[in-house]
Amino acid sequence: MRFTILFVSCLLGMASVLPAADPIPAGIPVLPALEVKKGMKGYGLTVFEGTKIERFEAEIIGVLYNTGARSDLILARLSGGPLAETGVIAGMSGSPVYIDGKLIGAVAYAWGFSKSTIAGITPISEMLDVFSYDGRGKTPPFRIEPSTNTTLHGQNVASAADSASLRRVVTPLVVSGVRSDLFPRLSKSLEKHGFLPVLGGSAGTGIESVSSNLALEPGSAIGVQLVSGDISMTGIGTVTWVGKDGAAVLAFGHPMMLRGDASFPMTTAWIHTVMPSMSVSFKLGSALRTVGSIHQDRAPAIGGKNGIMADTVPVKLAFTMGERKRDYNFSIIRDQLLFPELFASTVQSVLLDNSAKDGMVTYGLDYDFTIRDAKSGRRETIRLKDAYASFQNADAWYNSLYTMVVPVIRALFSHYSEVVLESITIGMQATPGIAAVEISGLSVDRKKVRPGDTVTLTVELT
Image (cartoon, rainbow, N blue to C red; front, side, top):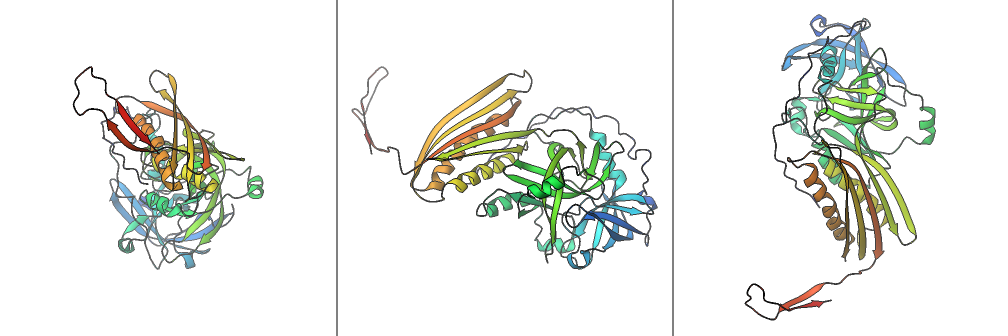
């Protein structure tokens, strides 16, 4: 079932923008793009397996000036590690590149289906500038900025046109806990946001325990989560820069979804392997420990802070079928474009894991949506109770899912109130077979009526 949701854009109040700070903090050795020359040789850092940061080589080809609005791009040929076999790897986004020990920027762009390992490097001064957006105040809940540059994302990574165009290195989005038969539909939706969705899993308790004290540093793998918990969807990239106090983090060298002010869980990550491909080679990774939050998703980079919890929507789901009982917990990012799809996919996957796609079934459904008025702080819990019965399991589920999603979306995306969805609790009871009646006939005792008349209805139930 596909939901079509119409959003009417409204002009948001303009928040005051703080003056831009010095883009290059003192004490950080950098080499500006203007000083980068053809023939210079340097090196980069990234993770090809596990958490070990490895070195690759970089030779400067030149600098493309004004590739965007007051933005430049450094071109370099990369070598070393598996790059000769794989080309530029999805998941290398953010890999820092140094010349004479000075940071010049991050690997961020490449050409599709290219036979060489030529990459576009985003200058570090442009990446550091994303922090100048800090301090503007919180944006309204579930809102994105009205002006969004769509030329950098939404591209199909398998498009033939990509062979001749510079594109950002696609972000592998590792999906775990979602059934494989639901993955193709979900994958198409996620590709529109610039991701390369791949089925994966968790790193495992052994790896997680060994990596429990792992911290983000330049060249290490970083995870950015759309969904976390029993179901996980994690974008994999590389850390470019970490502030002297260890709080601020820059990564990717390009946007994740270009959401501007954001709140996405930021994690350390484990790289299982690099998957070579004729189309797009990618890192297969898993999220490890949540260490902070990505709060800026801008054209030059994503910026985050360690020790800050992301503001996400927690979802609790309790499923019961006879003696079988399962509880699930996960959290979803507050994103007006992705939230409906992520919510539907995660809950539907839980249902199919515990039931069957076909067959007669009756569902009892209880939903609790706790919401808060952003201005007054007043909280209220909306409770819905319903039941569905069908000869096709999927039909009953689609009907119930529609009932769940539509009122929430209408409330959250209203232009007349700013409502924050704090949590969702779902109780689902499944009973094999049909426990329902159908209205098979309806008749009235007269054809014409006047105000005040009493009309007798005869209802036939099967």
